[in-house]
Image (cartoon, rainbow, N blue to C red):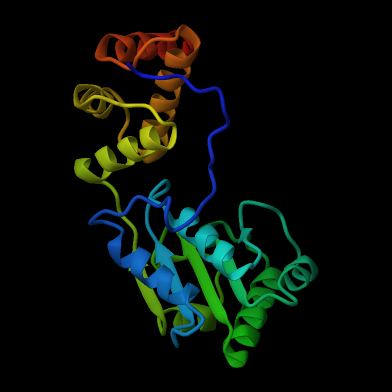
Length: 230
């Protein structure tokens, strides 16, 4: 019998909680190397579609190294950029494709990148696109990103997505039958974020109704989501 637990889910982004699969094995290996103080590699750029695990890996590196994390999704200034990483051992910047078209920010990012590079400190960056396709990035920075480790993160195959759904279920200490995993993959947009949202809706219904996760419950959860989205 499935047991029900009323406790918050631990969403900590660590290497141990990362779901390794064929599409992200290289990115995971490179990330572990960057986080290792004894490894000479000090520059990593990750790219790939939304929901593929780039942010998880950047935050995992930050956890190991005790360094701050910055995403270009949040507003920042040149001064706040320098202030955040003033005493950090690593420069960790996510979502480079969202860097604003601002000459001051572009120059500041290049300057702090160069400062970290010249001092031998670690640099980890990520975006949706390969370095040469990133808009509003200094040409010098684009060239430098190509000097280091570069890895594409891709979990677009069904096997990887099955592993992600099963890992989420394990984290919540519930069992998800194979037919439910297949049903979610067949009836949900293939974006990883949408798959996770579909499981979360099923999980919440399971907890609220004190019922095991089964195929009929998965169908019921999908109907509820469709009704609420209308």
